[in-house]
Length: 461
Ligand SMILES: Cc1cc2nc3c(=O)[nH]c(=O)nc-3n(C[C@H](O)[C@H](O)[C@H](O)COP(=O)(O)OP(=O)(O)OC[C@H]3O[C@@H](n4cnc5c(N)ncnc54)[C@H](O)[C@@H]3O)c2cc1C
Image (cartoon, rainbow, N blue to C red; front, side):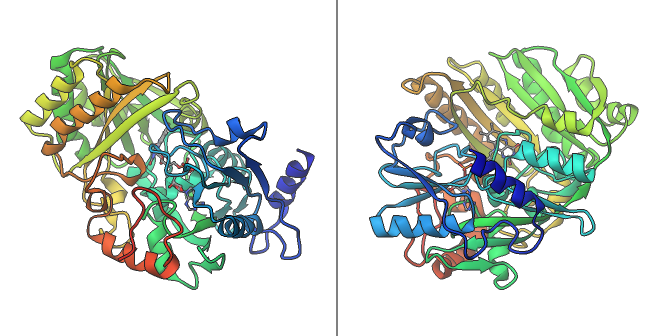
């Protein structure tokens, strides 16, 4: 433990490149936990307990040198590999059965360059740590996700959408550079290979190699922001009206406002909530039309920025198992689509349907400017279900499948890679649209042997 702390302290103070890699002469500190070891049970576990994979071993890397050593170890032992950072992948694509999981959670340095307005982030950093460090040390932030326990790696590589998204774009849009160890154990940089940066901006994690360093351009944030919430309680008719009003009106909101609509009979929720960079009166006024449609009184509060984004940190700790899937809208949800949502929510074993607003600065880029394809979409609809016992969950999974089957035909039939779903057989076009072909070319160049492979990884052309 003392070793880990001193290594961390050292990382925090270093500024020369490669910032987060070990000095070439240092010995590898790779720590391998194998099946049968006392700490195997905790090493193999996934955030989503519904994922019950049993890898042969988990290799904890502390730096870039360890990453290369882990790849060599897997090759010598003939083990398939998975790459894990925050471990939140919905379908467990960061783990496997009988292979090696290369775990980066202990490779977690951050270095902020205030002069340059950038930060360098090691792959194991969690979002809550990043938010905290950026704000306390540089009064800055990044447009990232709403849950603090998510890993910066998977979040960035799949896109990364959060409360500042409409104002500043996706997390991957702030990515300036990456370092990556490829399948052959060779170091690649986006400075030398610009396609790498293109692919790492939304092309999905675990496809091309192991990212060992992200460089982000920071954004300025105010010290105080406005949060808002409204929940008149569950009512099927109100839920239908809310779905219609949200998908019709929210895309016209100022980009300073990021609202979410959560519909759930079980949670007694027709809930509108979010964060605004405007003052309370402007926020109230901008949301008036949606609030009138839903009914009830919108509550607004002025809160410190960090408290607002940290509110979501750790809120998944008591959730054991989940199944989720998503579909993007390109415009308002039709009347039939709204009926499909409400019918799903009153069905037995219903979970929840969440609407997240895209557009704003996310739509600023062309669809092929980066691997993230969904620049033209307005709202992301997510069907979500949670349960506690990993041995159970059949009714919840069945509900997600049937809710999705009835809602999806009213959408663009495209989905977010970071809300991955094994049931999507047409995932290449759903996640990546016309960018898939270019991703396949990059895959062929960086991983011709397909060592980075999972059920929905980019296929060789
Ligand atoms: C509670 C919860 C809240 C969420 N909130 C949001 C949100 O607000 N916004 C949003 O956009 N998404 C959100 N997500 C989805 C999230 O973005 C994805 O689950 C993401 O893939 C998680 O990244 P991770 O590093 O934690 O997961 P991991 O399981 O470690 O990795 C995810 C994928 O990336 C790969 N990978 C990980 N590290 C590397 C690396 N260094 N190099 C190459 N490949 C790598 C893995 O192999 C895997 O394929 C949320 C998920 C959960 C469970």
